[in-house]
Image (cartoon, rainbow, N blue to C red; front, side, top):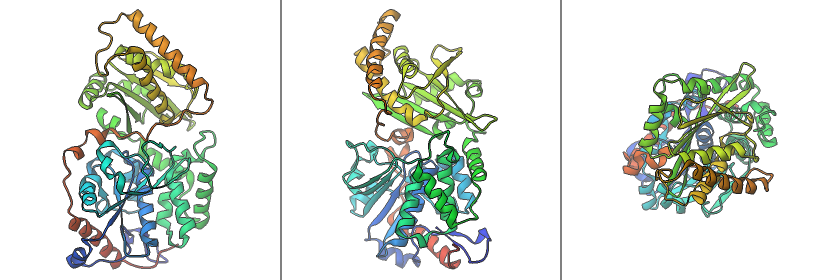
Length: 473
């Protein structure tokens, strides 16, 4: 992905080889390309490090191996302004000297206009379900590369490659090494190697995120490039950058790494918060800010999973459920407390506010991904038991005894169903980041014309050709 001069480690000479290795020259080249299709490699709406690196590396591979002069453009599926919330992404881009200015973000390219013009092909990486706002783009999807269980109801009708590994970057690494290992340079290897290590928590078998394939391709990258950063060093650096929430507001902390689930019009936000829950709960005006956050985005409940590492570098997970609706909050808490698949091993923590329930999570291997199916089931049980329209202040006409009775019945039904399945329940469709439904994309994009996109690509490639030299492998 990065060109550099052979025999030197002067990283300032590196330039990003995106989106094409062929140099284009000026507006005449842009004009000649205006009728050609554009292949967009699109990551997921959270744009975490795995999604970003997978999109960049896969677009690089496809460009290098294309038979014709095709254009493969990685697009980061967030607004450019949202990148500041992703410290690990920014850190890694700076480490390999990829300037943010050469990247294209979702609010800078009109995929719907390209599709309507018949010029768009989509390759989805690190997700396979498009949000409702992008439903029209499904027919443009030509390929999927993902590491989540397939949602057959919403998966596009195209070539789908899915394998349940710890990091999607592992699957991209496999694609490169099996398809064209000679194109892999050190900087691409650095990105893939570090991302897999971060996703798989430094390949720690006690955590259980790394699969045999994840380990296999980390070792292959290390064999090909013996001077890659040491695992402990890159993991600690990326983890520190990811967990750095200094200077962020409460809303930014909640939006930094967030998913949203929906059921019959009810919305629940699930945010990963990278700090100790006790410190988070002591933030000034926290409850007012949580209430304002939910009201601003029409969330009926907010689940915050805090995570940090203790002095022994062991992960600590805690949960906070904020919900003004009594029956919904009790339903969520009841399902989480009674869950056996997985058993969260929750210990209730004292709370000074009736709308907030906090827990210490004894099962540190139960990540947010494991929590999502339980929350979906909790919503189903809530609607089945209460038999009321969603979004209403449902307990206004019910006594506490009636609420307890209904929730006990719903919880018993739900847990009975879960206990019959000793495997983890199947994951729901890839959850949408809350920014998708509420973001300015719904009100129109500040659009880049096709010529402007190609002009940006031209600048990248011309910069590459100015510094061109054989890749250092």
